[in-house]
Length: 266
Ligand SMILES: Cc1cc2nc3c(=O)[nH]c(=O)nc-3n(C[C@H](O)[C@H](O)[C@H](O)COP(=O)(O)OP(=O)(O)OC[C@H]3O[C@@H](n4cnc5c(N)ncnc54)[C@H](O)[C@@H]3O)c2cc1C
Image 1 (cartoon, protein in one colour):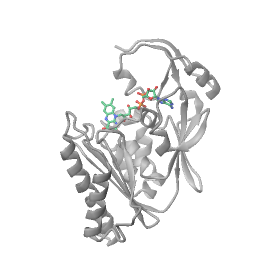
Image 2 (cartoon, rainbow, N blue to C red):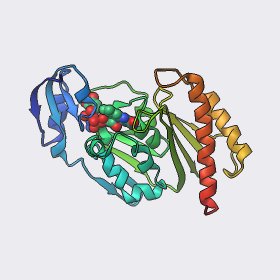
Image 3 (cartoon, rainbow, N blue to C red):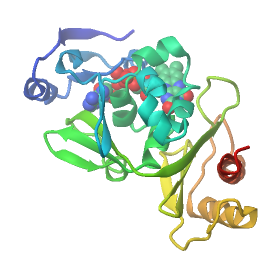
Image 4 (cartoon, protein in one colour):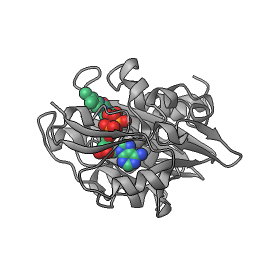
């Protein structure tokens, strides 16, 4: 059972950061993950009073507070319009609505879980994280950093024209993904981000423009092969490395086909 000694709800981010400097302190998101851990918490820091629970749509970006729930992402019209429902699709399989009403985007991104659908989806977009006190950095940089005592306050997704498909493979509904895959066509170039390999998600950009037109199945196949060769896959209790590599190629090609079908209005 998880034991918490003190519980505080700071009213400023400075206060939260000061409290979090102690190694026995812990920031609370929705506690979906924390509640499964056993390490006792000295001071549990609840960010609920810091107004971080809103998604703000600006002219050039979406600013997502760290305490925004996965359900808010799922239901957000603007985000889902820009990504053709990819954001909704990436969270839709996570446990159930009640869980998604509690689990936060901050906990999901700060956790940098290998299996994370949210991380996989956001890495395929032009995304930054805002940390207190160090400021903004690209999400791609943040995922490679070791965990420290900073606080994630916001996630910023830049608005840009994109076509996007999110797909995942699960052994059974609502289980952790065996493989997660976000494919995005931006500025005439394809990006495939593959998570749950089972390592953290990584994005591969089609720098040499293997794909000129995503309706061309041969080009998509070459791109899928290139992505699978570039990334490493490993085995765990859910699937073997070979199976994951195979599924990655299938999902990338399938995502391209869905984009082509959408374009043809089918
Ligand atoms: C049974 C189960 C099944 C799941 N299945 C999936 C799945 O299929 N796909 C998927 O993508 N995810 C899955 N998840 C993960 C889930 O979606 C959340 O990512 C997870 O619960 C963490 O979010 P939280 O809000 O609950 O964070 P918490 O559990 O509260 O926190 C997680 C960690 O992040 C830290 N933290 C939280 N917020 C901040 C912040 N703002 N700044 C700094 N540190 C912070 C905490 O201190 C803690 O270390 C699953 C989780 C569970 C428990």
